[in-house]
Length: 161
Image 1: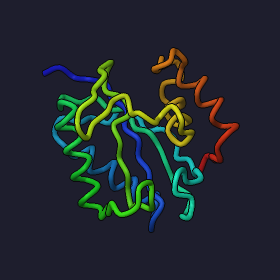
Image 2: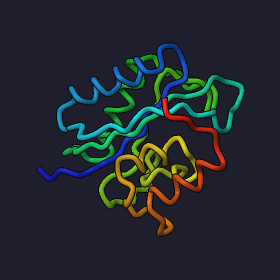
Image 3: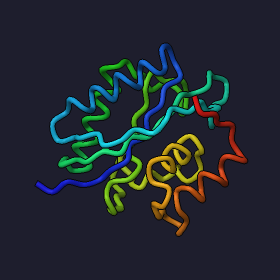
């Protein structure tokens, strides 16, 4: 089976944030068809969108997967559900949040799945840890992960944990 390199965003701002993310990573590691290669350092970041909530803890994982994008999405949604994610307020508090940021070089625009993630270039909490793993990764718009991360660091509150 062909393996694809993918990047997943992980975040939490409820309960034991670090424990929630680590549990999600353990569950990903146990999934058939997913190999975690590297995980960026954890960052504390101010909420975006809905700001009346606690800061988030975020990271990015680089994986190799034999799963097709829709199957990978189903796996991460299952992990979110298992860990108690409730979808009540858009961009609101969450026990855990997992997103497919990049899946190989594929561009996917389907109901419920857009890859590359449509808002990742606007979010320091995604771009800073992504730049830790793949600083030279060329992203939509022609800039590298590192270039975008540097721009966003000046605009949004983010601190290494």
